[in-house]
Length: 390
Image 1 (cartoon, rainbow, N blue to C red):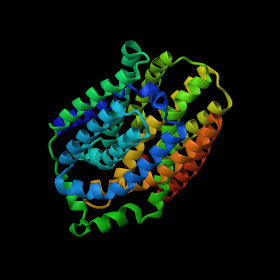
Image 2: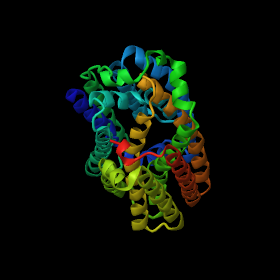
Image 3: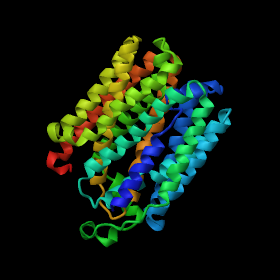
């Protein structure tokens, strides 16, 4: 349904408008939160997400993807109000608990609704555009941060509340979409049970290789572009006022995600994935050995671009692994595993960053080496062809 696609694109754009994004770490530090506490909160949030993923996936199948999206967008809005008013560890922790509820609910549900709304046609492009619009929202908010907000952190938090409020309103216009008939015909009715959805999602060592590799890429990208970037900019001697412009530029690079399908078509899923792991790992090594401002900005931009290109490919591959008619449930189970691995990696990044920023970047490089190896083994076992990825 075209209406759903437009609304989903609008929602992800508005939710990408995180006005405090350029100073998210500094925002928390100003309230007395340390880097380790930030990553500890993130790790706990991911663990909570893991625990909620499967129940949310099952609930989404019962109440519908549309209702799940509306509920999650409303809670997302409330979480940003709490973040705006947070002044201590308890406040920021509460915000992340609500974010865990939202992440678990949206995980699998938004992409499942996208998949059904485009009737499974040209899904790689749809996922690429969806991911790109989230970055476009961040780009716009970063520019506005530089022009309007300056160093007023709390104003940045308030503007983010307005953006998420609009996204919550937009979600009310979504419509439920049933599974395409051709998909129903491929899946036997007896497979419609949580137990069989669980087996289909994780009772497969080959799929676990892909999920661990994706988790390592996701957490490295998150650590570099959300936490370590601002610490690296401070290490480089850059002013806080410049961080909005820098994040806008890095977000612009992230829009390369819309070319994910073209990259995969040219290099194949093995070549494209390995290139992105290599670029991310190589950039982490570069960032570890230098604090030169221009090199730092370019290195973080490369990590952002690689992550943006990898996300649609990962989403496409995960959706192609769904074996039952309970798409949201299977994707939620996959996401639970991803977040479980991610929680461990997140805490490791926090501990490394407390020791030294270069050490945290070297950890990112190690994650990419391991992730690239696992991804290569998975591709070899699956023996996929480019034609399998639409």
